[in-house]
Amino acid sequence: MTLAKVGKRGGLVIPSEERRKARIDEGDRVEVHASGRGFLVVRKVPRIEDVRKKLSGKLPQWSKLEGQADELLEKEAQD
Image (cartoon, rainbow, N blue to C red; front, top):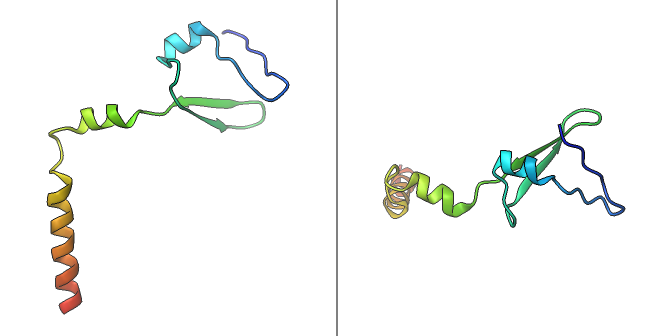
């Protein structure tokens, strides 16, 4: 366990050892959630580029899905 100190304006510096363990790098965005009295959960938010790489080739192209959605909406409107 590593200690950190909250600054005057509420800033919190996450110690480098803990950042390394969590793979949080400079410039990364994090989500902070209060979880009970005295507990904060800090979670790294995935970058959109990383999500795109991970999903690449696993989902049909967006335009194909969009076209299918348009067709379904047109069909529903006619019925």
